Length: 359
Image 1 (cartoon, one colour):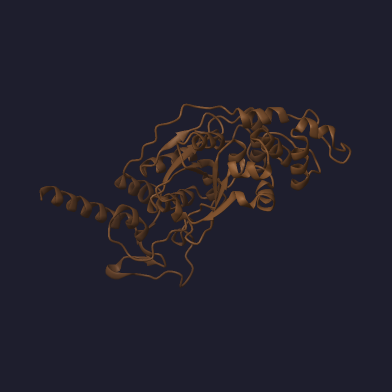
Image 2: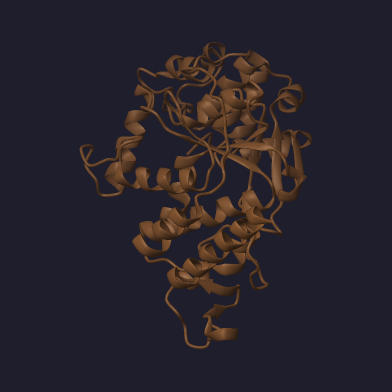
């Protein structure tokens, strides 16, 4: 859930803290991403694990095409305050608590981790909540921004948050500046955290009947939750019994911290990527997208939207372009890369590299 209606509040009361940009504006930047959010986005859109892997593959390719350096952060053990929420999500998904995947050990997580490592991008294990560690990375200057659709990053003290960095060419990326936001709202970070708790967060219940505007005015006037509770009508705004707002506040302000990682990117392992995606997962890749990153000459129409491509969906009559030159299968995004064609690509690259060495 993140922070309920915080984006709406900022858009209405602090629009000056948002800058609208394009994905190309982040060329050369280091961006931290909460991997669980990305995985869940694709799993919700396409429950098939293989297609979710392909979606993450194309999204990562787009970052690399724009010379963006992604850092994928994986969740550690969830904080105690969040386990009740995770249990509710597990039940709604039809799983028992025993069946709920634990961070870092599920087979699906391992598959995503393997893909990202083959792509040569750094993967980091958070001590607890990945969103909190992403905030630590950006506030410490290790990365330039955090890309996430959840607003928790700001509550955890992340100074720069990017939303809608979804790799679409026409997408308008929203960049949130925490320092500007606090200045406009005239709040300290601690007061802002109390505002987020009043709005509704993942770590405790909320006072009923408080909308975003009312919650903001109360915090601006009384400065903390304790004084807010003394100045509201508890009949119309019921305070939860045994409300754990103090534990949530402490989690946002003093979340578990870890030693800052040394980030290192490496060249993608092309043969192993092909083996993993094409042979093990039986997926087909858009050849022109592969060429944009890996350097081989390919067809036109490189796709840059980071979504699961049409060639992985059931084919509709008349949707595909049939065969291209030389009998290679094509679609609306360019030639499709199969296992056999990629073996030829890798072999031709090795020959060229050998010739260059001999020269």
